[in-house]
Structures are given as C-alpha cells and as structure tokens.
Image 1: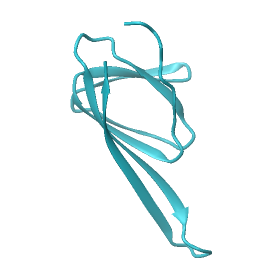
Image 2 (image 1 turned 120 degrees about the horizontal axis):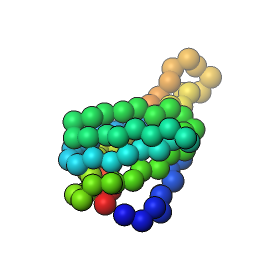
Image 3 (image 1 turned 30 degrees about the vertical axis):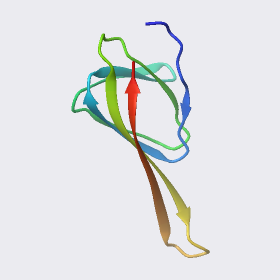
Length: 88
C-alpha cells in the first residue's frame, strides 16, 4: 500500500467502530491498530490519518459530534453526523 494519508481534522468528538477488517490510526507519533469489533474515541482538534496494512478493505462506522451552547444558557446541544468509511 502506498503511504498517502488522508488527514482528517476532528472539530468535535469522534466515535469509530470497526465493522470489518483492520486499519492503523496515526495521531502524531502514536499509532493504534483497530480490528473488527474495536471502538475508539478521539477528542476535539485531533489531527489523524489511517492506513490499511491488510489485503481486505476495512469498514468503519464513524460518528462525529459537535456541541453548541443554546443562547446564553447552560444547555448544550449535541449534533451528530454518522457515516460508513471504507479504508482500502
């Protein structure tokens, strides 16, 4: 596999869950392998990228959340956007 990462900047929090396959997530100097059934959480303002070192595509469910304050109140609204991501 060529090393051509697609860098993703997370603005809120991100939950990822591996449906199939495996891939390695890189955050700065650190890396973590995610396999089928694994889940992870990334914090706000994290820059990361993925690489699939296997022979099969890795399929993830990814949900990004962004919190906003409602008016001047202490109430916080959470918006979530979910998607299926395939890393080949």
